[in-house]
Image (tube, rainbow, N blue to C red; front, side):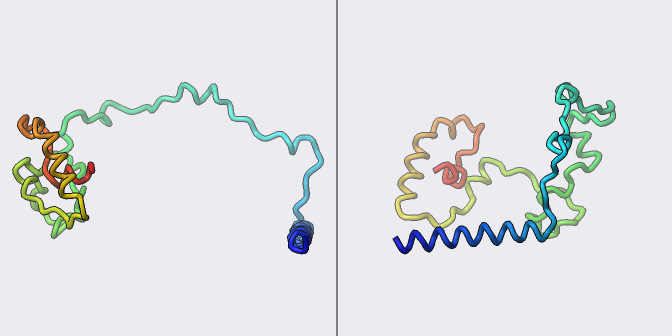
Length: 140
């Protein structure tokens, strides 16, 4: 019971202190009726919003993007010399992916990884998808 009285008393003191601070800061509720009306957004005008662009903004093939150097510095943090003029790194081949070193596995992960590898063996034979151990580890 004493604990309840303490909680109630503390709450009342905090409320009174907050009200006092609001009064001192000059925050008051406006009494005119227009203050309660918030500005309304006309959503009908925004419902048919369309992005306008010219035909020159549209680039629909990769070669054009490469000619304009779009994405030239993409993944630069992964390169030894990010601003070097050399050719960007080539995508990983399926053979390269099989050579990637696995991080240290936790107990039981190796068995689960082997089980997953056995389940996707048909995908490996198709040679269209990455099913190397590093990729499969991400899906465990």
